[in-house]
Length: 105
Image 1 (tube, rainbow, N blue to C red):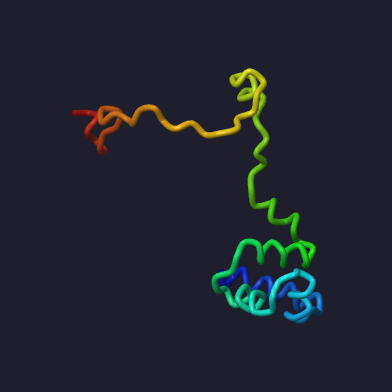
Image 2 (cartoon, rainbow, N blue to C red):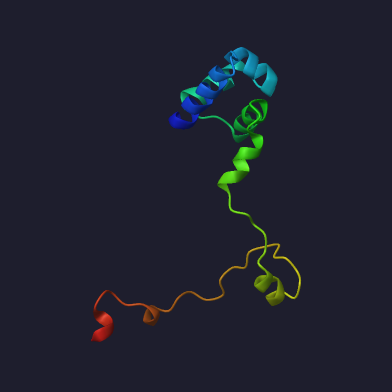
C-alpha cells in the first residue's frame, strides 16, 4: 500500500496537482487522498477515482489477464460462456497423493 501511495503521489506531483485539486477532480475528499498516498486503508472506489482523474483508469486492467474464453472451452460448453463456478463434487482421495518417496514403498 505504501509503494502504491508513493507512486500515486509522484504521478500527482509530476502533473503539478495539489492533493486538494486531485481530490476535487476525483470527486473524493482531501483526507481520502492523504490516506491513499500515505499507504493507509483506503477504499477501492477512492483508488479508481484517483486513477481516472490521473488518466490512468485503463491501466488497472493491464494487471488482470484477459478473461476471454478459449475456443476449446467454448466447444466443451456447447458455445456458451461460463457464468458461474462449479463447486467440487468430491474431495481428493487420500490415495491420490503421497509424501515424497512413499510412492516407491
